[in-house]
Structure formats: structure tokens, C-alpha cells
Length: 351
Image (cartoon, rainbow, N blue to C red):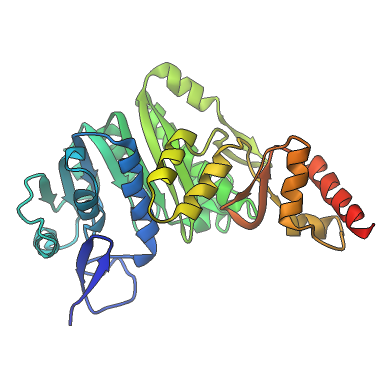
């Protein structure tokens, strides 16, 4: 028997099958709720009007339905749902009816290959590429369809490649070398950003990350599209290597002003967003894993995190926890300075 679940404002009719698979008649992944929550919140914070939204891999349609229910009516001019699964129009109409959206004139539905759909729909203000796997195959057509000042949202679930488990795959798909250590998720995210940007610069579109994070089994980036050769050249100047990894994006991962607004209006996920905001104020690549450093330096104890932050602040260094690692500290202090600080804290503890 079919079952009905609720995610925020939307009720979704699902097959009785519970195992997550792209073969499901209606593909819905509950783990990606945060992904969708942040999409809604970001568009709310940007407060754009009359957006033309493209969802080339719409699946269950829950993201688009949440946009329609949770964003101000003025935000959306047209929203296009597309998926290549069999009888998609009928399946989506069933979900729309369940949520009293079946008569909404802003909605169009198509049942085409995602790239064909994108080629036929230009001038998009928001495009969401959220595939079951790597996003590479859809980026060229998505970027072509993106308008000036448009937002491109990209999800990559192939973390094995980006985080260094399969370095050859990463080189082939993302044209970069990953790391396989405590920094792997941040490095993977920066590799993804650069790869997307390279495609954009071929069309004189500078894609600036305004919100980026790694969570669970995926990485997620929202790009703002700016047109112009000079901006593209500036973008490329921020592509370099780090600890023999990359090339990768070395600029900011998120926009502070946007995150501040998101934190202000958010009703949930505030702790996660606040952490992203704190990190965004420290424009450095990587972080220090306190457990790894203690082991490497053969220290007999680990100072309390609060003591480390206090000591860093007293020395005029910026510091924050990082969402990339439970034991990570992002700071403007050099590794040598950070290790020295840890050792001094332990010496004081003995006295």
C-alpha cells in the first residue's frame, strides 16, 4: 500500500518500498531534507521576484512544491518540473493534487532528458542540479540556460571521488587531485567549485559561490552568475593547488551578508547556519584537527576547545569550529603558531 509522509508544508505519496533508490517510481530521499530546507531559506533571504525556476531532475517534485508553498507568491513567475522517469506527468500531477497545487498556473511539467529540457529553456533565474550521483553531465547545459544574476544550485553525491577514495575518478571527472585526510571534504568541495567555474568561464559567466557546505553523503554549492570576461579572469586567478591537491577554488566558500540574513530569518537549522557563518569570516583553506596534531606532536593531553579559542583570540587570531570536522578548528594562525599555542596551554596546565 502507498504511504504518505510530510516534509514541512508538503504531503508526499510514496511507494511502500523503503530502500532509497533512483529506480523508485517516486524518488524521495529524507536525508536531503536539509538540502531542501536551505534552498528555500536561501531564496527567501535573496528575496528575488518573478523568478523563472528550472528543476531538470525534479523527481518527487517536493523541492518545487515547497518553493510554491513556502516562498512569497511574488517570488515565482514560472516553475518548470522535469524528469525522465516513465509517466512522469501523471505521477507529479498526483502529488500536486495532494497538495492543492494542481490548478496553479505557474507550473509546467515535462518528461524529457534533463539536458534536452535545459537546452529548450533559457533565461533561468534559478536552476537546481540535484542528481543521484555526479552533476558533471548536466553542468554545461545548465550554465547555458542560466541568466545574468541567476542562481545555480549544484549537489554532488559522488563523495568517494571528491574526498579521495577514488582519486583517478576525481581526476577524470573533476580535472583535479583530491586529498585523503582530515581536509578531504573541504578540498573536495573546493574542487567541485572550480570544475563548475571552468565550465562557466567558457561562456563568459563568472560563477561565484554564495553558499557552500559538505553534509552527510553530499556536497552542495549555490553559485551567483555574473557575466563578463574580466570577472571570469579574476575568478580563474583563484584556482591553485594546496598541499599537492587541486587545482581548486581558493576564494570564499560563502557570502557573509547572505548567511547573516539566513541566520536571522531561519526557524530551524540555526546551529548549522551559524557555524557556516562563523567559518565564512575566516578566509583560509583547511583547518587544524586537534586530535591529529596531538598525536603527531606526541602531546600527552588535548587542551579544552574553549581554552584554545580564548588563547587564539588573545593573540589576535580569528578562530572558529568547522562543519567539516568534529575536531577541526579553522583559524588564521599558522600551523607552527597553532602547535606552539597548544604546547603552551599544556605547560600552563601542569603548573
